[in-house]
Amino acid sequence: MNNFLLEQQKSERIAILTEFIHRDPESRELQRAIAVKMALQGEPYSKITKLLGMNKSCITNWKQRFGTEGIDGIQLGYKGAKSYLTPEQHREIMTWLRGKDYCNIDELVSYLDENYGVIYQSKQSSYELLSSAHISWKKSQKINPSSNPDLVKINREEILNFLTQNQAEIDSGHLVVFFVDECHLLANDVCGYVWGKTDIRIEILIKNIKDRQTYFGALDYKTQEFIVHEYPAGNSSSTVDFIKHLQNQRPRQRIALIWDGASYQRSDEVKKFLADVNERHAADQWPITCIRFAPNAPEQNPVEDVWLQTKNFLRKFWPLCKSFPVVKWLFKFFTNHQEFDFPKLHQYAPCSDLK
Image (cartoon, rainbow, N blue to C red):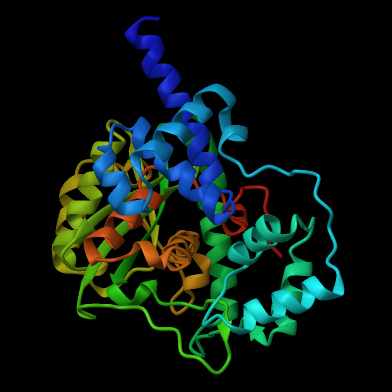
């Protein structure tokens, strides 16, 4: 097999693993998929073992199994086990759960499979076991009192009108539309809700809570590809640099940026850059067009869902986050040049109802 076909095969396998990772599989399956993907991408085994806590022989084994069996080779697989517990087994599991400081759903599923041969078809049965052990999951909801629903509706209609009027240009690839947002990753973002005893505090070791990293992200409206780039801070210079980065990613194409219009995105430095770029072009042919979301309503931006899913990924695997450089690596691993498809993105489809 020539080098071209080998590279094509490797790319296809990496794409399959990427899609599987975004399905939010069971934690052991996810660990195996990440290890195999890193190996296929040429990462040193020493780096993979340090990051994921797997030894080299395990990585080699899962890579070989994936090569011969595909995704089925790294999945746990349904073994046809019984899906019930005896009263005595139930009491044993309650004792096990009550003796733990914390527990997540994947750990419980694995414990039931390995110790009792029980595999529930629905996670609800596992939730009921956790509830019986007085282990709960709680999260508050936030709302911005300054958000104006009427203004949000008007703004959404304006964005839909722009997309509809330019759909032919978007389909042809002459115009690329990006939803853009910034994220400030903090060291303690790995802290989140986990399954744990209600009277026991769950602690994650964080050496320096001042560690932080700013990321600019852009979600391609047509392809759902996500492009992320890190910067020292969110400011005018970073904004200009990120726009240039997007131009390099989409050469010879006009770009429309839909963003929240932060103060530094409307600064003199950014305005001058845009004026220089768009000079001598008609308004409908500007190389860079900027459209603002309604203020105080971040839920309009699909990129918010990318940040949320990424941070949830970090929180789910917080035992791997032993240093902030590892946290940053996992952040970019999960986001950069991946494809995301959220319901929030579909609200901007040209055929969306404008009610």
